[in-house]
Image (tube, rainbow, N blue to C red; front, side, top):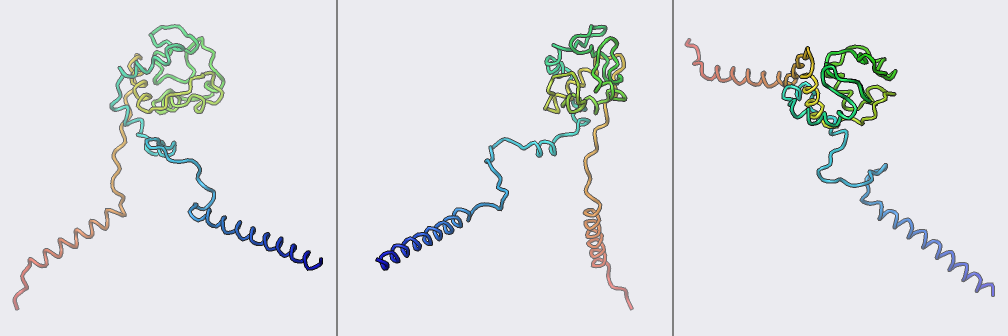
Length: 212
């Protein structure tokens, strides 16, 4: 009877060891082609660009303003017209009348009850300030009453600013577009040195040896 009990115990112990071995082996097999944790979940969708890549690739607003289209901006402004009038002498609505807003101080329209967040903004509505506001009013002035989410496309923002800048008694001059980036000095110097050495070598080869 005791031998039978030992046999059963042996089989149970053997089965447990075998199960443990299989568990370790399967874990190694399934982990073989996985990247190091933390794993990146999901998959790449063709044609979708990450927000980080979009931010890096965004063209400077000054560059876009140089070719902005006020007529296209008027079409985009239709999204704003339910709250804002832009006619000279127009009345305030849900939002203030914004005729002549470009270059005007923040929160300057008489008779409109601005949020404390916008009243706290100093200085005029420059192109950079307006670009940040149109991109995300809440990010620009946390606590603003404006519920509009913003214009995600920088081209739309440039066109709208060109349109608003045309509806003022004193249009702002467009900002200068940034100059294209030149090659870094540490890259240009070796190239210039190589060119100089090549020219010197050519001159030396072309000069006959001195007599005597």
